Amino acid sequence: MMKTGSFLAATLLAASALCGAAHAQTASAPAAASAYVNAPVAAPIAPPVDRSGHCGIFETCSSTKIGLGRGDFMVRLSGVGILPQDRDSKVSLNGQRLPGAHISTTNQAMPELTLEYFLTDNLSLDLIATSTRHEVSGHGGALGAKTDVGSAWVLPPTLTVAWHFRPHKRFNPYVGLGANLTWFHSMHGANGLKLNSGFTGGPSVNVGFDYQIVGNWFFNADVKQVFMRMHAWAQDPAETIRIRAHESLDPTVVSAGIAYRF
Image (tube, rainbow, N blue to C red; front, top):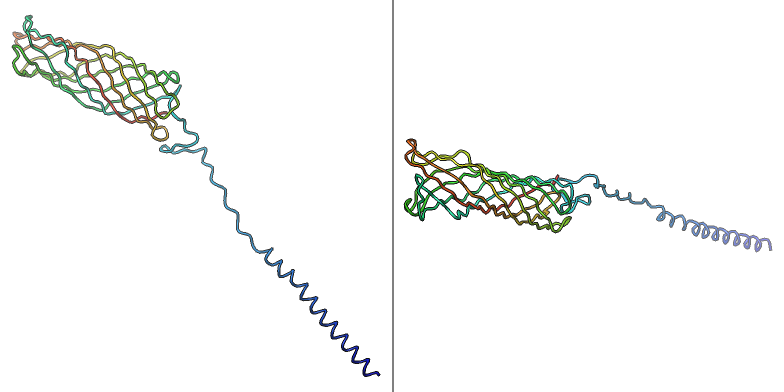
């Protein structure tokens, strides 16, 4: 009987040990699972750099003003073509009118500088300045097929008031009305003639447009029609030949260039 009791006690002890081992394994499972929950987390992505306070000269940023408007000041560098129309010539020799004779001047291309300020969103004031050299010749009547008269440099500053139709838009067409004052300088007569001319000027009209390319950079195209007459005279050193000419030059001025707004 004692042996049977000892066997039962041993069996109970073994069963208790097995239950403890199973309990230990079950208890360790959450610990293993918690190892995945507590795994290292990736470092957070750095926030984007705020560049709202800086905009490059060739960038269009959120702070860039679109189009043109009141208070804008622009400097424009263009290539310009001066195309004299040579209308209504009157030429005289020693006081006698030469029927059929007329004067012609050559076309010329040069750089042009323009300064423009916007008085309002729609209204601007601009001043152009350039100087071009032109050859002058006589034709027809007693002058024959062609008579070389000489050459002259022309400085024709023109002040224009322009109306812009689409302020604060990238594409902004305009029309303008202005006044021109022309000075002929560095004049050289041909064949020993002394060549001279007085100041002249007249009104002008123009059409054109500005287009915002990027940032504060704009492309401009413009056509002006200037109305002015030239009064010139030439004579030989002995003053035996005196030629006077009156002509409506009426040049067409075509330009295209790049502008920067300040």
